[in-house]
Image 1 (cartoon, rainbow, N blue to C red):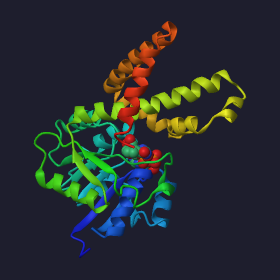
Image 2 (tube, protein in one colour):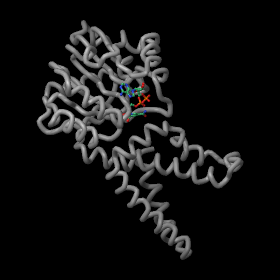
Image 3 (spheres, helix red, strand yellow):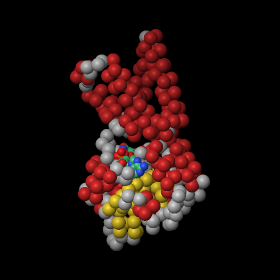
Image 4 (cartoon, rainbow, N blue to C red):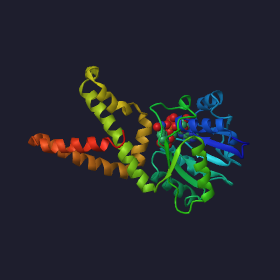
Amino acid sequence: GGAPVLERLVVVGLGLIGGSFAKGLREKGLFREVVGVDRNVESCRLAVELGVVDRCEEDLATACRGADVIQLAVPILALEKVLAQLATFDLGHAVLTDVGSAKGNVLRAAREAFGGVPVRFVPGHPIAGSERSGVTAADGRLFRRHKVILTPPDGVDSEALLLIERLWRALGADVEQMDVEHHDQVLAATSHLPHMLAYTLVDSLAKRHENLEIFRYAAGGFRDFTRIAGSDPLMWHDIFLANRDAVLQVLDDFRDDLDALRAAVVAGDGHHLLGVFTRARVAREHFS
Ligand code: NAD
């Protein structure tokens, strides 16, 4: 509540995440205006119509002039280009942040674009989303009671960090800080690997059963396990390419364990199978 203290929020990329961030903060009235930038003209039109932003601006430099906060919510592989563009003009006092699902690549891109990570850059990653995408899916309550991980680089401006924390908290999120490498390893394990497995399972079955008839016999377990195979293919394509090293590490570990399970089935080693399943069930109980 209270009077708005900040002048302008600029959100670049008005999709599910950027749109939800813009809409939620617009509803909170923390900024005098919320301005959107999106290369898709239709998304811009819809964003204004749906009350996601106050207005859209075609030119990035014009939108950013005098801005207090610039949120980058474009697809991961588009981020490099946008950072390079931002580096060509004066960002003034603006605090820069992003929402990319992998973070090491973002820091590398920022370092490259600016010749060093800007001290007012606070990289972030909201652990919230859905299988939907685009501005029509924008929801100001998307981040409520969800974690947002910030990965501030060494030497980050502490006021910039506090401001970004404050914005996410205003949206009801639970903000945590993590070291970049740790973030990328944790997310590779808990998010990227499961998506890879779900996609592969569905594709592996689908291409062996052309009329997809077998899916008629799929039960609840299959449905639960494969829900995330309905996620945006382009976004996940970006994530695997961006978080390559961490993804390869968890994939190799997983393949070792799958091979061991296979060997146990071949050998009729029920002890191994029971061991795996029992440990997994106990571990699973810690987060249900
Ligand atoms: P989205 O496809 O819904 O939206 C992306 C938007 O960016 C689109 O409106 C597109 O037109 C626009 N865009 C693309 N290139 C652009 C450019 N060069 N300049 C300006 N606009 C451009 O995607 P999303 O789901 O909102 O994801 C955005 C970011 O959020 C990604 O980096 C993703 O990793 C991250 N993220 C997504 C989720 C999720 O579940 N969807 C969760 C956490 C983080």
